[in-house]
Image (tube, rainbow, N blue to C red):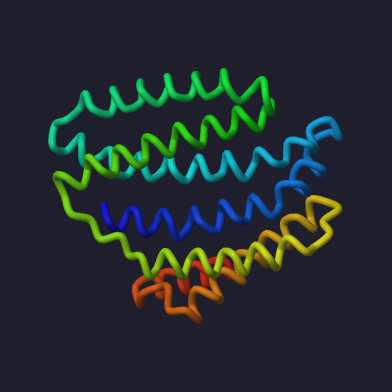
Length: 193
């Protein structure tokens, strides 16, 4: 489970920041002008997805120890929390309020499920690797957010460049172990064939 969390975060942290950096160009290329103002929602929903993934990893512990009703109660409580926060925020700030409500609900389930899971199993959180991933992702975010992207081809080029920058920085910071570096090399070799 610890490795599942580590690998998930090594992929999802740069994905969240990459989507956040590319939110405006993504919407301007693939939607109409009417949806462009919704670019603020993308980073919030991306972060919600990251928290949902953390919940999915830790909920397995509860299922292994046969606490199968607990995830149902957690999800039910989160749904009620989401509705209540929606009732409060949507009239004030619209769709951004709905996104914030979703983020808070997923934060609630991730924290609660992680807390309950740690009662049954100890997990290694790999804080150093997560910090390296956050740092690499922030540099990638700053770099790719400065590009003017006018079409889908430019979007894919900048996204690919961001991915390579993230991998390069993680390599420099020794954020990958030898096994992971070997796997990355194999992927690049296969993609060139």
